[in-house]
Length: 490
Image (cartoon, rainbow, N blue to C red; front, side, top):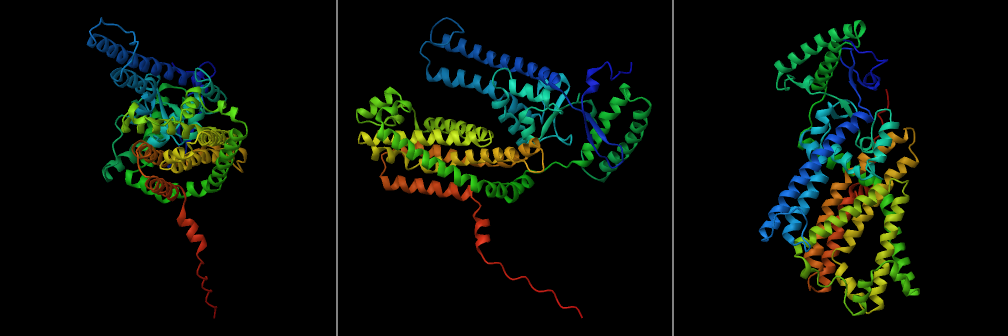
């Protein structure tokens, strides 16, 4: 029975319209907040079930291996085996369910498939790994304060039903049961292309008539879906990894680093001023150190020992490096995300970290451990601070776009700025891996100060060379050759 738009709320959803060479535009129905919540709840139950199944199996095996009875209760004194084989895999299953499955299935999850949805680009195409991972990073914000409050609110007020992560990544959810994609041949030669063109023309002709005669008929809906699939197959060529890398290093990163430069300079200056303020505060008012250091840390320093001493006795260098990287990555993501608050968040994140570093150095210096503090941080600290300031500066770029969007809307300016600066995050992440390895294998060793300083300034040079487009600076400083005069007309 044909459906009536006046009584069927699904037909009131906005349409994604794409011009077609045949003159018959391709259309896809955009999913709203209700369909999004339906898919999310199905995925939520699946990942909770998977995480609980792993936990239950691990807990039973752990308790029986220790000679006790099978139980689901965690041990009173968790050991490394429990942490590495039970706790960490459960967290990985729960937290990485969406990004891993969406990348592997190209915009699908079991919940989305059950609800008849898929993630699409703004032109109806299939998003790549970059946008899919970016929209999942924003779950940190969309899930706040509880039960995806921010994301649900955004999907309700946004005309395309996009949450904040979709706005940032340039994606949205559309209705797609998967049937219309079946039978679309790959573009492997002229025969396949001719077949696609012929079918596209025929489906376009039938669809144009069906839209006039029976717009709400189920057969018309099937033609709409088939027409959209054929249009997508003919218009969009997949980007090869080589093409993606060439574009990243030749266009995306140079542009992002040029845009980052003034914000990075301001962020580094702010960090230095905050560190000086923290040092001065603790020097003038020693009791203020209680705001930055725990009682155990102050007791250790008072006894003549830095809190960093004995780290290798607690964990091996490889584990310590992993812990340091995880902590720095979280700090970098938070600094980037906080920068979206019209750059106020960047000031807060960098200021707090700068004041804390200055305060801890003042505490160490007051107890005769200033040299030991510098000896520990000189190998990894300069590059690590530079990378964290770069992440905050990237967030400030987005905040600037929100504050002054220009001719674009705030949503368009926000989305474009996020995608530009997000290209810097993998680079910053790679540099933070380098810093974590240095901290685990160099900073904790009994090396000469000069050797550690050489490693530290070498790492800083690498970080600066990667995040600053020196080619553009040198090109601007070189005099340009004079433009040849036009030949005189006779």
